[in-house]
Amino acid sequence: MRRFFIVCSIAFMIVITLSGCEKEDPNPELRDPIWKDLSERAVHYEKQRDENKAKLKTLRESLEKTEPNTMDMKDVRRGIAKTEKALLGAEQLSRYYRIRAERRRVEDKISAREARSQGKEWPDKAEYSEYLVNRRVHEINLNWNSRIPKLQDRLVRKPAKAEKAEGEGSSGH
Image (cartoon, rainbow, N blue to C red):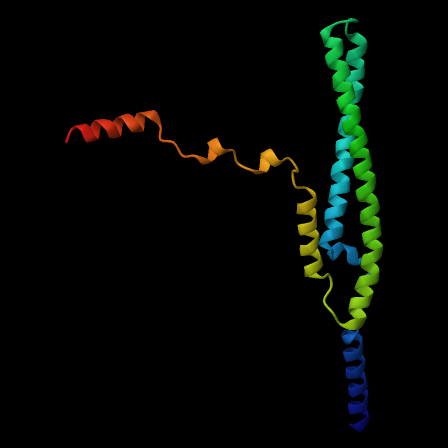
């Protein structure tokens, strides 16, 4: 009987120690909202790049079919120039966000390991809110006219029909 209790207590201790151990997460970046956002942006710009490549191909084919020295040719060339510029921007941003996401993945592994060893919560919610604020500030339209309402838009005017209706109602007294 004594031997049975010893075996049961040893088995109980083994079960507790095995269930109490935490394994290190092999992919902590999957829980990081910043990494997810960077990866989604990289994919978005890759799709834009592919669309611009296809559009550029069709524009070049239509350039070959247009007659020389016409307005159509000028319009197609303008479209090609605009599409090439958009293609270059999409390629650059795609590469930029891919690099940022890869770097963030490495940083996530390091910071998740440190947070786990210190017993802190990871990912840090304050860091994500700071990231969102920084992104919003970065994407603000710098054109003053688009952010400030015009004086004419701020003045409230009554429609002409409403003014006539008020004038007729007051003259009846």
